[in-house]
Length: 190
Ligand code: AMP
Image: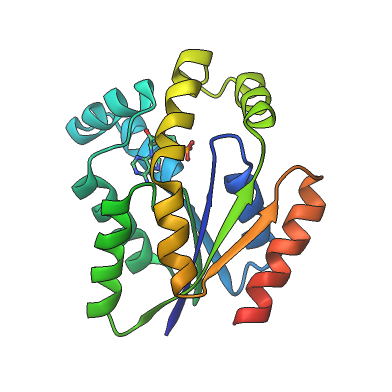
């Protein structure tokens, strides 16, 4: 049985960095996928699908449901470790429902927990504008990404709280402190 952990948080919360470090600390047991990185890899491949994805990323909008679900499905299928961390998913109620349906029909994957990395909007903005990763790291796109993040977050929290799966952690500390706490949560649950 593969054990799935979802790492969510605002743009700039550090969710990808944190999850990446946990996988690096546990190379034999944990694999990590960042939804944003998987989508950017498709853009970098130069495919027609990548061109379509780019238009959404560049504006800070959500890539359409079917593309994201296919991306998540193939990440889970190719995972060669039993503990899978996926960050940046779900980012909408429809993604959450699609995942829930997928989990109902799949016998070998168990959603263990959803870890939310919390940061204030100011810290998120400073981090994103300071890192200049690409076309989506400017103030207008940041504001839209924040709006897109905040829209469904209460519904997502409520849904997973009912399943007692939500774990919130304070993302305004050093990376080491955050990663230590996240790793502890994961290890307590496996
Ligand atoms: P991130 O690297 O997590 O900040 O994501 C960068 C961009 O990739 C987002 O602004 C979206 O355009 C796209 N993206 C990442 N995750 C998702 C998702 N779960 N659903 C739709 N689009 C996504």
